[in-house]
Image 1 (cartoon, rainbow, N blue to C red):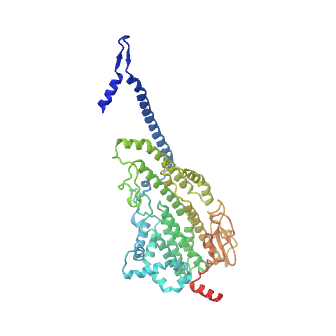
Image 2 (image 1 turned 30 degrees about the horizontal axis):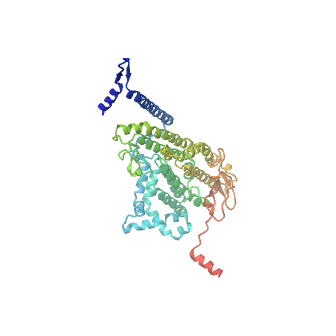
Length: 534
């Protein structure tokens, strides 16, 4: 091939000698092709220069996106989340993992997954299937007192482990940060922590109804501590699990507080124990740090996907193949120099610029995660939401990574500010009960609780900064409330039929106990009504 090209070039520069004039002239072949070769060479030169500039420009934009994060000392790569190991005797996570491995919960998980169990294990699973009803429905609990006590006896090891874990303020969940975990969801059996929260709630209610109020508060404190420990992982799913478990263990307070006995008498809760629960609820640091850590996890996940695509190294050896769902992209290093050059010069800059936008976008969620109230968050994230909406419109060929960086996270923040409000309302409700026991009546306003019971009236995270949670001192239905997701103060209104639990306008804590929900009509009730009509 080279000989052929050389021959063509040689022939093209051969010259003719005019016999008459003796003037040497280039042959016609060269005259016809010299412009073609010039254009080709110029095109190649421009392409190479443009490719170098294009690649350098994309690198610069990507560095502009990641450098501020690195400068702030925040984790960017997945491995950046790794910390110094915690000794086993100081690690609460080990005890919680042991709790989900106890026979009661492990057997329930196995049967739920369709695995066969010995006949002796089915009784525990029967009772676990009734657990939520025991907590939520007083009638069911009163109809099955023996079953409740049997279930709590089976869960004794769970309670012991949770009590031990509460004394430890550090949690290392054993995440392998040396492996890139795309789609990391948390430790195995994550959903079982919800079951533990229900068990702790049931134990608290049973202890209260049995006249052991101090132990009831201890169970609730165990639940708060477990929720805070679950928030120490860089995952939105684990953070939502943390929120869910705390919401579960908060509910029994509405059952317990109306007639909670406080003091030194047998069966009463010690004031210092009750103040301990109130202080832990008011300490919203774990929840606030948890949502920021979850957003950092989302940012790192997108960054790691982009980095692997750009390095053409999306291999099962580098990424947890069980959680990638077959997502392998990029160009193998063995695909040849030409293919590799085309990828690096043409496609890689496109991906790099798209990844740079993604890092900036996800970083906005991290930045506004520290907002103290929902309105502040909404104002802070609005530009990023508009930018994402515009970017995800139209042709996505030049934006293949954008969808990875623009998940729908709004609901996470609704739940986040909702649980902050719930913690503060529960703490204020405890203070109201303490005031009531000391004074024989409830306070006229929440301001009456300051400074003897509360350092200050808690802020309402669903409302504008500086506005506090509300108190409706209704003789029939006293309640503490937050304005809720719509931000409008409706005076703590609720539906008398009990439908307030479905998308309530406001978040409510009922100081005299939650109103009973209407029981659904049974088939027998329907038949009776039909007979009466006839």
